Length: 354
Ligand code: CUA
Picture (cartoon, protein in one colour):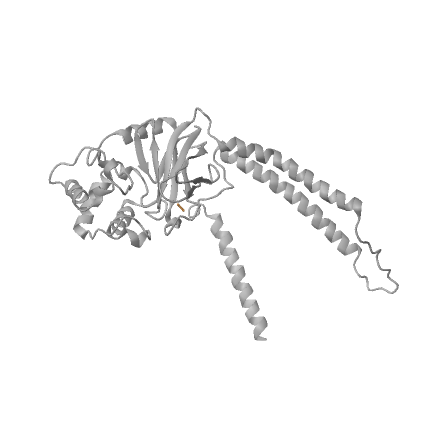
């Protein structure tokens, strides 16, 4: 029968699809967004609340389904002569009160730790380490008011430190989500929200804008790098440095000329190069002062892959500079019509900005 055959085929494909989904979820190299893998005290609080509710739900499920199975077996039609019809009832006040009161008590019990956690995580502690996050289509800008540092795509934080991110948006609503470190929190234009972050150990934690914010929403990644205090202090020192301008005639210098003359400098700022024109620019793009110190660019989506080689990085950078909107649809960085030679020296210059 062709109908049964196609049904079997369909089932096979469904099973295959399910299996590949399950297998894909196992690989944390390609899918590093795992909310069930807390890496700090804040994420752990959310995680323990999740498991508490999960196990209560499991107990309820087993009891209810168990009772259902018992009833099905005991009161089944035995197909024997003279089997009596079970007593027919309509409504039972006592039972109904019991199965209303028990769920009410369970929900009230769950509400206590839930509301406690929500309120506890809602606001930053007063002595937190401060960073500012601004959401833009389609990348995150990070600044450190106490250190005079502005960067993009990668948020660097010290480990075992309560970090308070004050967040806002310059255009539409975005949502900041680093599943290993905390839940989601909106970035709203004209309003400030706060997000607590705290990482136990050094490492990288990936995230994603979790609110649809336009064409390249899916390409608006976030990346947090947690460094032990000594490494973090070193990073701060490096970020505060103003890079030396390249010597005339070198490829880096030629790249700088491309940066200044083709339109890049109208939106991007490099300390010591086109400062302090930042306030004058109308379209704000990532600060490139220490571009090469960031592992990623283009909304933290390039280079794709998690441990790219320098060559892969340069290939991605060349493709990006040649035609940004082809890589990030709707990108406000236009195709500047750069020649291959211009792109080559521009990459040499950008990669020297460590
Ligand atoms: Cu920003 Cu989605």
